[in-house]
Image (cartoon, rainbow, N blue to C red; front, side, top):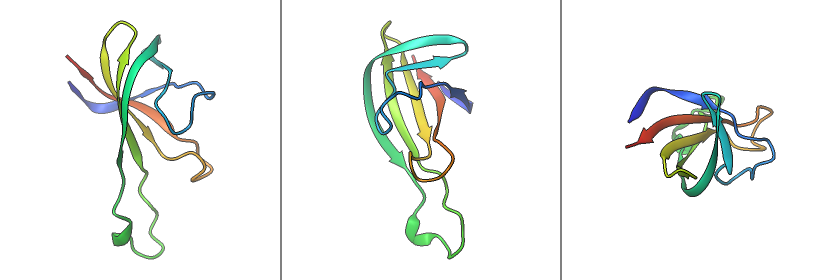
Length: 96
C-alpha cells in the first residue's frame, strides 16, 4: 500500500550514512531491520537543470523487512554532506 503522503520516520544519527537503517521509529514504535534491499536512487536529470536553478532533492529508496517479517518502503531524501541540511527519512508505503 502506497501512502498518499509519505510519513516522516526517525533513524538514529549513528546509522551508516549511505546504507539502509538498522533501526527506525515510526508512529512511536521502534522497528529493527532484519533485511534490506537498495538503494534505488531517484534524482533530477542534472543535464536539464538551468543555470542558477536549485537542484531537486535526491531520494534513495530501500525495501526493508523488520525482525517480525513485515515489509516497508522507505526513502532517504537528500545526501549526507551535500548541503548543510541533513537527509531526512520517510515511510512511503507498506507491503502486504
